Image (cartoon, rainbow, N blue to C red):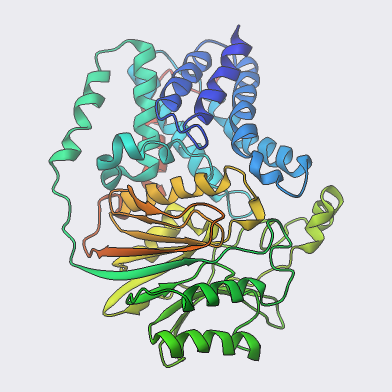
Length: 461
């Protein structure tokens, strides 16, 4: 029965994410996991956490096998499972202190996955799943804090302790904290131009993706203060290629409106994934080079081994990363661009967003086909908006392009795989949330404190 419950625990954790989106699922899954990890010796705990972890990550990350086969997907799920099993190392007593240790350990392991290995992969965090239930709490504790509260409350339910009431009564306090009012607004139009075909060959026809975004923008009757295009909208280097430069100039001359373009620049040392803000004059006002590159997508760790496992790895070029944040500015409003998986790292985003009045998330989801990846990524972006209390304009080549307001709600979105434009009235904000000032070190410190004070909740021998 323990094995069946471990599988159920993992599946319930997964159910909090798209395509299921069952917010209560992670509560129940974490509760079952705590019960299992408080009953057995270390070897048994490890095996059960391994089963639970794989039951969680295998369905969650199924999209990672899109167009590359099952082996990379299984290996990624196993890698994440290996990190997940660290939660089985402490021996959790069925006490409030044991519940605190479980919650803090679970939270820290999520943060470790966010950082390691190869720069980390913070996908599948419980803190991403509660935007609709706990939106008002995100500005206080952030994504990591939501994970802590959910797992702590789940463990207390298993203990049938009155302390669960403390958690229940704490949550409404967030409703009493006044939300920061908007300091201004900016009209933005996102262009979802689409691609000729899904998969790694989405840009096989030179200028194909760029022409789609140019034509869609030229046909737009909107007159925003800013047009935004997604990541890789210019599939040809618009700085050195005269054809690409000419097409972008055509948009600027016709519309006379600033344009934010996602592009790939070619260089001697390797390509760079960039976000370029063009002035109506054609001058480049600012350019941000993506810093947080995606392992196995934008550079290839362990290349020789990776190419043996998946021949498609030979097609991955090693991109060059940027070294600092660049803040764009339009009509007096400062903002930053998050490119694709840059939405995953808590500390990285907090550092970039501290001076931003709103955020733009530029992404290209064409390489993941019709999988749940795009919807899962949008869920993460919603959590970021709620955590930072910032509007986020999301623009994707194939969807989902959306306007996320500062509470994490989806104001409007475009249909996936259908080219179109999305007109948004972005609210701008200046104040910072408590969560935006809490770094990962806070949760590591909390874990250390709980571990030290848990006299009998020590490592199992």
